[in-house]
Length: 313
Image 1 (cartoon, rainbow, N blue to C red):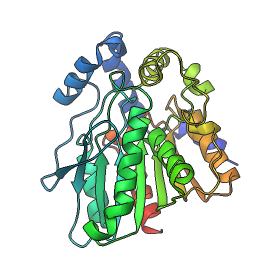
Image 2 (image 1 turned 180 degrees about the horizontal axis):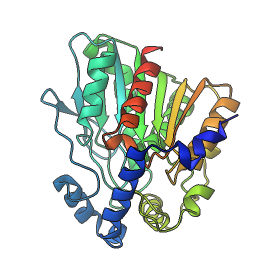
Image 3 (image 1 turned 30 degrees about the horizontal axis):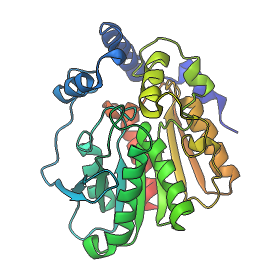
């Protein structure tokens, strides 16, 4: 069973406690920021005006475009010399914000420490492009990598990873490859702080207004953007928590105990394991939503855990 001591407030370090308090204080001063027009939220995020600190761009990143169901899909590629594998990355942002170039330091790290050619997907965003646009683009990118990795990167050792909404899209992508194409090309999946039930798990629905990166009203807006008014949000094609998860690759699920999407990870990891898939679960005391976006000793530990997971496969 999960160690309950991980959820004891005394397990939270002073560094993480102070970091969380700073995030809440900053976001509390921004009002109902989640209700701003998506274009404005995206612009502010690019300027570093939001809560996430802007991260430097990789000097070796290159962008190509592949054919997609809604037009060209940009792919941001960071590759070392002689890759030992390839990693499809799906960024987060509530299906509404975020870009493929906002987490280059993480992707550089995977390239350097794990020898992976990292391919980050610039999928279409909601509400301009609601379901199924984002999942369609991620499916197309995964098929491209499965088809092209050997000739382009010299490897068929493939991984997939994503954070928040990106972890949700990751799970849908694996299910689509299995069910629509009979493919299981990835040997490992890295799912960080995902949202696997768009209808909202108890921890998400009951969190309230505290703006520790996310809060309940904000997630409802993001889910509405993605789903629109008429979608069945518990359809397995929309919320992978309800899907048949048999035959999926080994997975590392990571989440902080102060993430309002905590239940999503606890539930999804349990169902992944119950489907007889190899499953690892990393629970980080006091971690807020996608806490690896902020420098801390715990962020380094969480990133090192991801490195070790990839290297072992």
